[in-house]
Image (cartoon, rainbow, N blue to C red; front, side, top):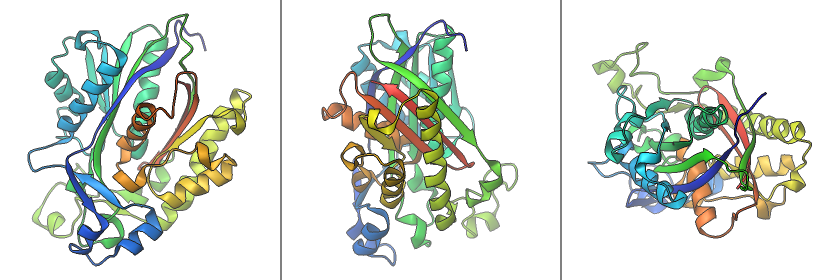
Length: 331
């Protein structure tokens, strides 16, 4: 593939709503327990939006922080891509609302629906825009407000999700930069789409009194089957990008996988045979924030001084669709 330029992650940011709900709070809301949740998921607390907050609000906060970290101005943005399945509206896109909130003018803005893989899918699209010379600076955001799409009568899913947003400025690298996106690989397998789905709210099942009563506007998931497919697909995507670049897992400084479940993260790490000390995990603080989980974990690790310039980071995700992907970067 001929590339005019290379892309790098120039800055990151994240935002979590102020309201924190821990496992003991959930014990008062649903038939569950702290021990049950911790043992099966590794989660303890999660953040929920306030009544007057939506996805675009969280995304805008994270965007400002990413811009600041990259030392860029709003007018530098050429492209905004938001990965989300819980956008403010079916249309317009949340990216366009973020554009308005930021005061960005005359740039492209659109959303990507790839479930928990949304941030990686959006980042890969931005990378290609940059590499072919179409844009210089792309703002990529993963944001979810899953608390608004949770069935609180389903204890198997309602304890899993949290709200939050993470952002990255992906920019054209200079010849003197060591940071760059090394390689990416994205896939999807629609034959498993019904394993993780919000059945109603689209053109297949528009909203009716019946769809609301039957909780068809909330998350429906077959957890056991998702677990096995998640580990297998993320492992395959990671192996693809590593082998394609003649690298092995010992060359990786950090692994950031989608924070869906502690067991999934640990199983993937074991399968890859990576040192557990190199695996970034923050699921105990945020639960599953879907498309926001990887950029939140990335930003936290950067700001904590774990990930430093020059480190090699492997990111991988799995989500509704079913989608999956991996991205190999030198930060």
